[in-house]
Image (spheres, helix red, strand yellow):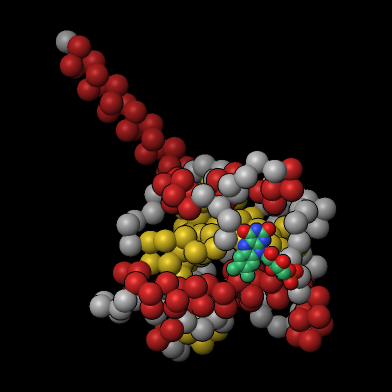
Length: 219
Ligand SMILES: Cc1cc2nc3c(=O)[nH]c(=O)nc-3n(C[C@H](O)[C@H](O)[C@H](O)COP(=O)(O)O)c2cc1C
């Protein structure tokens, strides 16, 4: 009897978890606006790291433009991106952590695909310092994750780390420049608790978080 009750509770628990995860629906982003913006030289002049953010959310259009600038497809005939990658492996996945949950950016469909229905932004800082609370309160944390399964097999660990770091940096700089163009604040960070964040994100064992970048309006 006890066994049966435990089994029923376990089944109910699974059902509730699945339906909660299913609540986070895919987001079809509006087409990115790929014209205009401030001149490149002005953006380079204004590119900087910021550490205080307003909690104001980003509009769907800003999110669309930002993700396309990060690593969207700019040559549909070849599927190549705004950011280069070693041997065109495209091994860096961009996850978007927002209040409503965690999504994976899919450049092919220009959608945000649901991953976890939970606000994981607090897991993107390791230290509970006051300056961190403004950073993790930013409406968007982009989490750059290398998937080593997408790289050539047989590559050394050292080369894998090198290419995933350089490929992430190009994406991060694209985001910094887009932020400079739009008057948004941004900070890229390596100081986070990678193990606990990876667990919360339910990453596979071929995946590794490289950097995290906060984006929002200035405070
Ligand atoms: C790979 C990398 C990792 C970084 N990690 C952190 C970090 O963990 N915490 C932080 O406050 N800033 C971090 N930064 C931001 C740097 O401190 C910042 O870029 C530097 O002070 C220069 O400032 P600027 O970006 O305004 O030129 C990181 C920057 C890079 C490129």
